[in-house]
Image 1 (cartoon, rainbow over the protein chains, first blue to last red):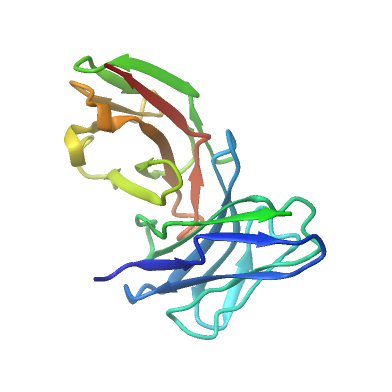
Image 2 (cartoon, rainbow over the protein chains, first blue to last red):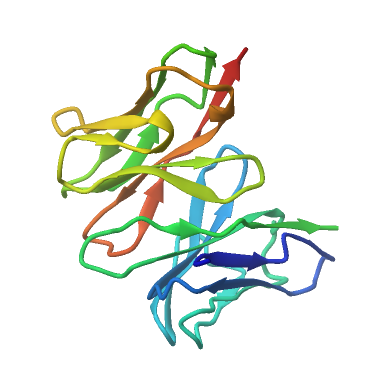
Length: 114
Length: 114
């Protein structure tokens, strides 16, 4: 089945640690995105990538880093510089084109700082 | 500035009664518009999309939405609510000036009472 796989589903991090969230897609999409979701705030864009080896900051990139070495993969690292990392993280992908198309979402990773 | 506003953070209906979730957008361009649904601790699923074809768009599970350019609105409706419709709904706008980037509303929680 084609889709987006995020792992792990739940992740616990100690303060001061870096953690990496995995996102893999087999939809052959060029564009991939990371969103952060907090209660009552909708989804906010962290980083996005429209092609391999290239990515851009979204609206809340501080304290996060990404890489895009393969078309299928777009891992997100939450660094110790992120002051409030507890949130639900969603990865998405879409076809790149002149007009915006719908994004396909993974099932999310819930990160909790302990 | 480009933005999207969901006018109600919470909507409560009785099972079998109509559903109306309201969305307004602000844009200088012709947008692409989407409605997504999210069940607790899950990813987002596309309900329907508008991409400059018919102004009345039909989606999955009996939902539909009407694009009204003069009112800059894209309200989501369903004639008869079902218990399984209880979820979070997001109105999303994509703009051709930001290829691939989507702007999310704050979300509307739909409660369906028996």
